[in-house]
Image (cartoon, rainbow, N blue to C red; front, side, top):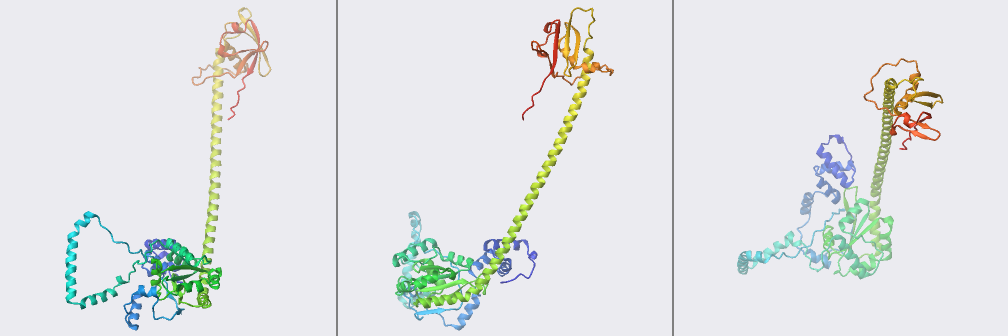
Length: 510
């Protein structure tokens, strides 16, 4: 295999794109892909065709050598030769030399002539009459000069168009997979159920799979019109030793067979230069020729004994097996390298993902901590402002509370108040004191008992005070809430015992 003698960084963008496209289709190593692309002038399509079809020798040089060393070919009807098996070759012949095995893409059968619509036929009628007149004139000219038709016929026989195969068997043309299924079905109907493992697809698919998996492709071509066909199938192909040899997994053989009555098999026979039936050819990848070549390493024409058939195949397999083993070892090493690289990349990606996840969690924790600190500071600042406003409100509200009336005032209400701290306060209030003034007295009691001078302050404008306790009469229990309003003389009477009961706020479960 070729080796790189330059840095891939020397390739331009177009060459890198061509290399990436070629390797994505063929999965070939760079050491073999770059030289093949260079030989193909960096044309991806040509390189892919060379990879699958193999790189053949220069056809111009081969043609020159053939013309110099061999006489001109005789005009022989190839279709008649293939079907009848008439040739100058011996009854059994083999060749151990390697020959390039082309990749055949089946061409469609000739279709029936197109029938134009009636209107189009009427339009071309004058041209048809002119053609008939010219044809008649040429016929008269040929009658007068009889040697001309023979010369024209001889030239036409040598024309490549003459060699195009026409479907004269009446078999309906199918796609390669259906053609293979039809052949297998007809084979079993003719010779019974057997253990041969035919490849159930076209020749091209078998060719590509054998090249990819480094298997031996045994191509068997038969002609139902040939006299030796039945003998070859029953005595050789279906013999127990041949079946066991073909089905042995150690031999690594793929079996593809076809009848030359089908278009694909006929095209394969033409490409493999088959001149006698029955015919068998062993095709395999030959890395000693090139990294993409497929060669015919064994050819068997006519009837041979089953042991000779197996011996010829085994000889070719033995000769090619060391080269294939080296390619398999190279591919296995390359695949192991790719797998190791993929595992390393996967481990790196997993580690990178874990690092990103840890970084994300750390950032989220830091952000949550910052938010919590900001909320705590905000709440503390809000509580400080609320406490300051409460103190200002108490100072203002304490100034609004009327002083305790003297003993000479009769219209008063005597109230005994038990504070949450346990202290008891007894004070007289004018009977017309509002219940809210009583609540304000209790709220501002601690400030009134302090020795701190109380400044004169206005009522806070942006503060709304809420009392966090209720005045409750224990016996009988009665709550004097502010929502009911009123004055102490009407609500409590002349005297009363009250308890300051704090309001317990229920915490939100959420």
